[in-house]
Image 1 (cartoon, rainbow, N blue to C red):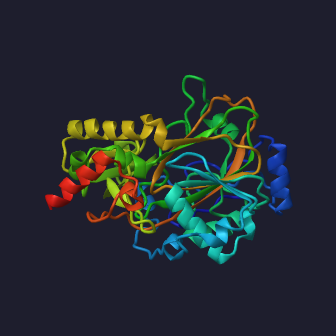
Image 2 (image 1 turned 60 degrees about the horizontal axis):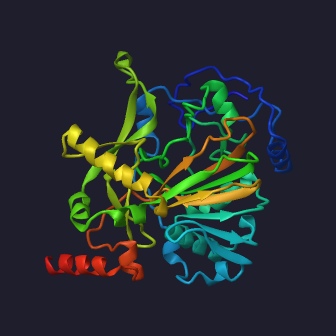
Image 3 (image 1 turned 90 degrees about the vertical axis):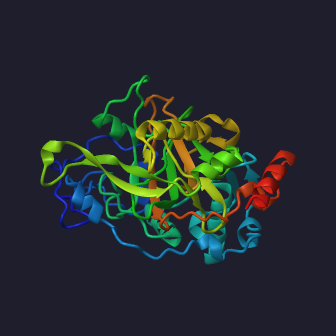
Length: 388
């Protein structure tokens, strides 16, 4: 099956090739049960863009987005009452729902799931019987599905991408010292005009030990900052870069360059109305208006707050047939490669794009809104309000 571009102007970087890696048994069983045609090879690779103007032209216009969580019942009765158990994994981030099948949720439950993800950042469902087609259908409820021009897809289901570390390692060998890939803190698609909202990763095959994924809360990272420092970064913007580099069509000799977008350092989630820190070490390049040296110091500190405070993180141990749904607007995540590729891992992922990031100086923090402030925080808030 020859690759086709997601945009007709895209020129493919390389010749298509048929993969020869054997699929893990659980993955093959799931794909065949879903009627996925594997005869032409797996996974399917779209034509990859070479020139940066082609990439900038993809979705380069404002698109309406209504966050489903904004219309949900705040108490989420339809979703939570149907579950056998609701387990909050930490105080700040991460919830596991027991006894529900994602493919069977009704519209009201899906809206409430959107709100739960917006509040708890990442929500987990084990023992899921969900096909790639059903995964895409659920993703479309949360927003426009991103069809990625650089990564492999499930054949016949554009927008459902394949996470298969063994395939990645065949192209870029990993090692214990340099695991590569997702083994660094990041959030997805920050270079988009309207970056990622909810991502749904379903892992049908996981290592028996290791391979955990970690998430950190942007709400809590912002709340870790002093009021004066929050005031300094509120309203500032930064340049966010794509994960993949491209060439200038007119001057390819300049070498690889990245897609860059300007977005706020602190943004507000439209469903919760809470402020969140929105930076990541991998793709936030510099703060607009500061010298690069100044920007590097501040961004390094902000990323340290996110990455080094274990009380605002959750580490999740996968089991086969588990789904994780997280919100890229309020989290960063990191996949552990401690299993070193010695056991198979395979999953499929769908990412819904969200609104254009915005900042509202009047928006509260999560702790303010939920009444979680300690005495020192209440005093700080009172002083800030008195100075307005």
